[in-house]
Structure formats: C-alpha cells, structure tokens
Length: 123
Image (cartoon, rainbow, N blue to C red; front, side, top):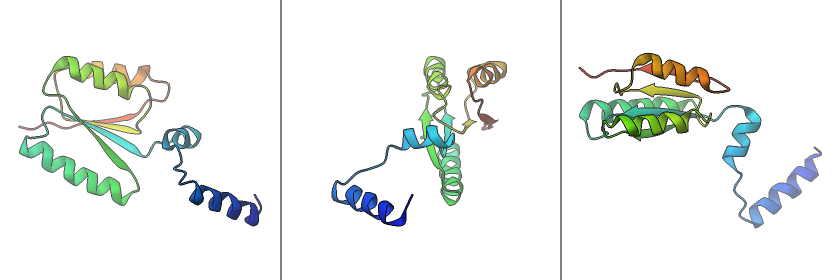
C-alpha cells in the first residue's frame, strides 16, 4: 500500500473514531493474543495472586488474560471449555479439577486449532 493511501485511511479512521475488530484481526493472524485461565473461585488468595502474576507476564508479551471463575461448578467448567474450544484463545491455564484430565485433553484435540494447556493445582 502506498504511504499516502495509508495516511488517508488512518486519517479517516481517526475522524470516524473507528475501532478495529480484534476478533477479525485475530482470525487473519491466526493468533488471538489471549490466554484463558479457569479457576474455581477468584476470591481464593492463591488463584487471585496467580492470576495477577500471569496477567503481568502476559501483558509484557503483548497478550491478555481471560479469567473464567467457575464457582467450582462442573457444569460451568464444561460451558467455559465449550466456549474456549471455539478457538478464541491461544492457550488455557487450568486451575480447576472437576473434570478428568483426559476430558481437557480431549477438548483441546477436538478443536480445529488445538491450544496449549497447562494445569495448576492449589494444595
């Protein structure tokens, strides 16, 4: 694209207060820049602290954190996993354990573009 054309487009975007569609952009790039974290309860000191540290590190790497607090409810966990399977995230950090581990692996494998998953546990 010619530099003057780019400048005209950027000026029009500014005048119209245009905000790019990040979902469309992530589909084009095939990278969302989002990592999801499932926790049983965000009020738990371990998970709230862990989420904060993960968010800080992701932010340094131009990524964002999507926090999913399941309320320690297996049905909510399943719903979140169903949503995450739609490829809206680049990875999943799981601090929940209501499902069997192979269910998480199966969920990851069912998606068209399997995400990376990490499991953490509070003792």
